[in-house]
Amino acid sequence: METHFLIIKNSKQNIIIYAAFLIIAVIGIIFGDEIKNNFTFFRVWDYKHILILLLGIPFLFLQSKANLPNSLEDSITNKQRFLNPFLIGTVFGMLDVIVIKTIMHPERYAELPLFL
Image 1 (spheres, rainbow, N blue to C red):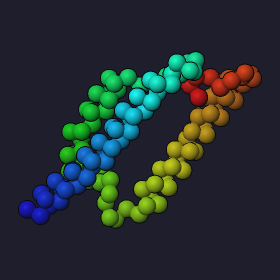
Image 2 (image 1 turned 30 degrees about the vertical axis):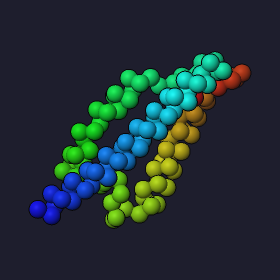
Image 3 (image 1 turned 60 degrees about the vertical axis):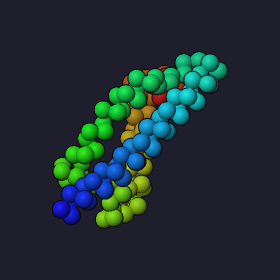
């Protein structure tokens, strides 16, 4: 019975965190719609992208059953939760820019292309 309660508690935390990210995405859409006329080639998400993100909600309930750590699990340190993903994302982003800029398109740009 205790594990069932723990799964429900963890699912609630995961849903709250997921909802917070959905709200951030909606704010980004609203803000992007306001400023996109000021910039050429500015791409903004549509609300249909939020519908695609909503497809992830059922998987929040399966997260504990799949033995994946929950968002606010006590056994995970803040370094593992924030710093490691930030560093990994930064390295992948830099590699992406390096590969696209130097290998795939070595000539000079007047401005960065849209995909960067």
